Length: 316
Image (cartoon, rainbow, N blue to C red):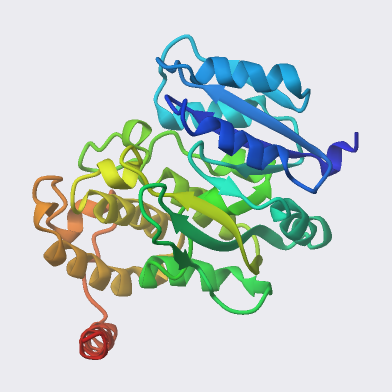
């Protein structure tokens, strides 16, 4: 087996007895031949582990591990990465799926371009309970883009770009060095437990190390919306405000030139989400550990207000 071409498909899992089989099947169905599937069960209390054992007995590419106790989601992600032996790494959340040609279409961009840090694809969000399907992340033609486009787009425009590595493939070393178990913050938020934003930092920190990223304009990633997902279980405002907390950490450490524009985004989100005070995130200063510049880019604020107003007009 060519170690340099090996892709570790990483599946952290906890209590997904009804979904884990389909997720593993989508990993095993890859047309890219050089894969291993790393599954770490975080001390599930249902039959998830038994199902993982069955797949490991059937296919030697499936390597399974089990924690003696639940160590929290982010530490479980880290253990998955530690157990992986590939050159490339693909995180596949235990409720999501990838198309059979996901790796075949994405890995060549990493293999052939040293300046590309990660590759992502279009995403379809689906639900087993409803027929509704929604597509995301169509940023343009298939090809290579500047990392600064991802960084600025994610920090200032939000939903244009993925905030989760679920539709992305990396070099394994970049996954390892970009995963923070916890994110330092002023308000005592435990990122190791709620896992809201650690995923985004994998993308931002990797983008910051490379000149480019790549995009495949094909629907090759499938995110399942269901009642037990983090996004569904989180209170109103918790997700965007904690992602803002992570973005603030990144900006004050790596991209201070964006601070005044980002303060505008923080102000908008504080006003938009009524529970900002509940999370102690009702002031711009609470998002930062060391930055004391809370000033606004007023030209950017005016453009954002006009853009928001136009969206409301044309959405009627």
